[in-house]
Length: 221
Image (cartoon, rainbow, N blue to C red; front, side, top):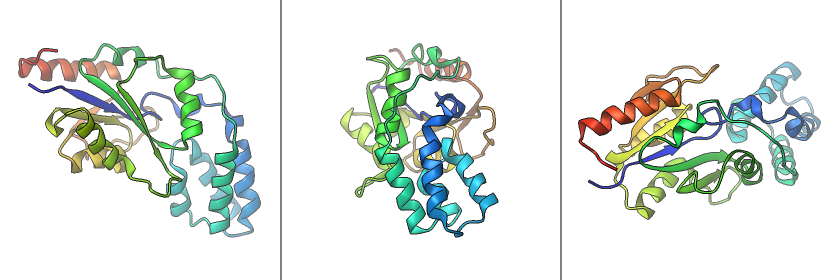
């Protein structure tokens, strides 16, 4: 049997959104407020800004009808920021290292900011590969293409790839479209979806799922 692999999301899957210090985002908030010029009502704008920790900036901008000026201000603030901080993953992160199979990480966001998270969280060898879906890349391919790239580069087949994440409209949908097994991890504050193959609340449950599946296939690593 070919190799089995799990592709993990980062934010709200491995890392709590609240773990990144609030001051990291203050320049972004201020840049967007300054560029608003009445486009988005103040109350709605403040609600939109609260989502920056958990939702990709491009999704927020579309949902709340940010003007081009607001989107550009956000982009420049993100790209020009300097990111270095300490943060801690969910308590069950160590379990991931015990789960069989190859491990990959795919996350959407700004590479500099995501790299600061990697530096704070991970050690060499934690993943076979880390990929950032850069929301400001002119040639952005998205998570689905990155999943395909991982499969191709590592000789993996969709039936033996599991996608683990919190967002049903992002990594879960992409995995489903590729015929991969999808697992939504329902962390505190995350709404449960019926799109995923499996629902879990922790990596302990993921470990149990994989162990049972492995045994049913007489799969040996």
